[in-house]
Length: 451
Image 1 (cartoon, rainbow, N blue to C red):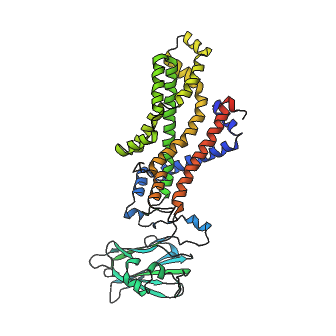
Image 2: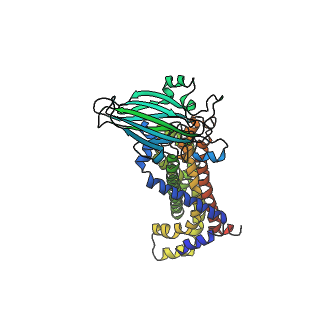
Image 3: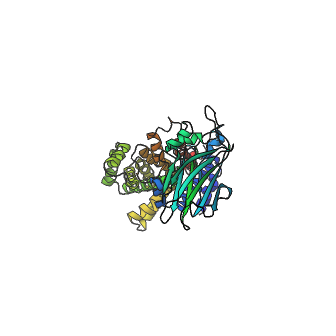
């Protein structure tokens, strides 16, 4: 504990190291939040998508915060459900028995629209509850300037979906203008300009039995959605951004710790036993140094498995006999000649005790900075493999976001958020660990303390 306290006190002398610690702490907190709020099974379900999962999300919507950086206010999404009463936004009016039906209900959805662009799409979901005859539904649209537009009439089944832009009769009534534009446009404007104000969608239903009922869900798909936006499959990008954090940190930490510790122990074994053992380790290291790591990982991902754990195992195996063995060997050769090693031999300490208790701990302070600096390198490696299409097909990760964005031409289509958000997290991860690692190197390396 005294060693840790002293290290933290030394780190305080380096403002960049403290900033790096803040970044690392933020990444750890994001990881904990993702694991707690979005369980693994739920994250996989959300990432796979499906009609029931993504039906309320717009397609290729920018994050809501982009409205703060542009003069044009992009339309946001509205999700209004009659089963979730929301004050003035949703009202349900029931009228008594009439000559046409047992009872009549009207659901009114209100939308305060104050944006400079039109929505992407309008969809009305209807769930009829009936014993014999389906409810008869008529839908009308009221604009802020008092106009009333008849949308259409239909029979509401158990699960009915009415897509405004698929109704050609409605488009003809709007003089050939798409409904998502014509319903919100200023009359006679050319080109169409959005009319700001309060809109109302009235869903009137005729119910033919006392126990019949109707539930409605009105979704206005805007140009912006959520804190991270959505992709081409309507998936919320916040899920892979959050879950990509623990995946990236786990991969980087396990790869760095696994390869560095094993490398250090193997180097200590070679130095202590010397002779043929040391020679064999050095020859294996030299052969391993000329092996191309990335092509080998690509071959494993292409011909064997793209599981992140398989890739992690291969990365550790290839990193065991890395260039670090040469560095550790040079240090261990000096430590081996120290007087306390001779003292340990004199009282009968075995070879493995000397290696694990007297040799290895001697260079742990030099190992820590190297370990911290290696973590972002492995994080970038995992992201690079995913961008190349060799990432885990199941896990939502930062590299997967960039890969999808690249395949869909996000930059060419102006969806910069799709690439910049995961790229920014990757850069912050590298910057945070690098700043802490360089400061630790100055603290533990006597030659750099005065620099």
